[in-house]
Image 1 (tube, rainbow, N blue to C red):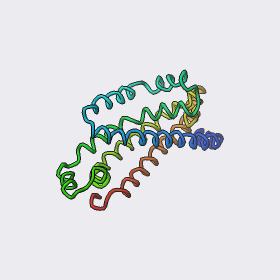
Image 2 (cartoon, helix red, strand yellow):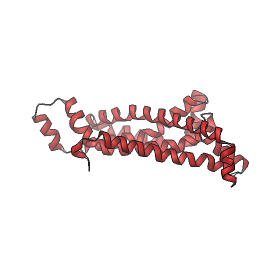
Image 3 (tube, one colour):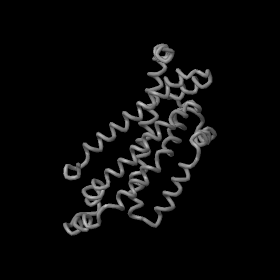
Image 4 (cartoon, rainbow, N blue to C red):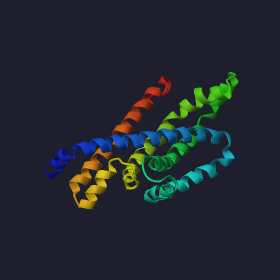
Length: 211
């Protein structure tokens, strides 16, 4: 009963926090994909650098999320921008690693067939390699999405907004109902984003590759 009453009383704050959380997630994920997918493609063409680049990205992943957000304050201050930078960094590794793994795992016979047909490197990439590696790449994007949604709750600590405001307010007041009012919408967002990406993956997968 307390939880339902808390939801009713704080509904405007929940709606605002959810909207801010979606903003943080969508922008960070978009930038992470924009960086990691092309970088993964480049690394498949320059494999001698792959271990070093992926290793550096993995190092950022090992930094505690709260510490990474804290590092942004002296550099970018507080608010939306430093939160986006920190969340983007956190979202890079799954996408980069899966893009590289997916492309390097494409059947060589398929690539050789494309070469034999006179296809250019660009055509091979977009017509053979990326479609065959799409499932693995999308798995990385979906993993990154859930990770970003979870870490985004900490963005409230540096003024980034989101559902973390409610969670930390509930912690400060020792009120589990307020904590749940922020945590449950965040969990629902993770499920919705993952489902949307799964649907998008199915839609763009070539008919011949659909199970």
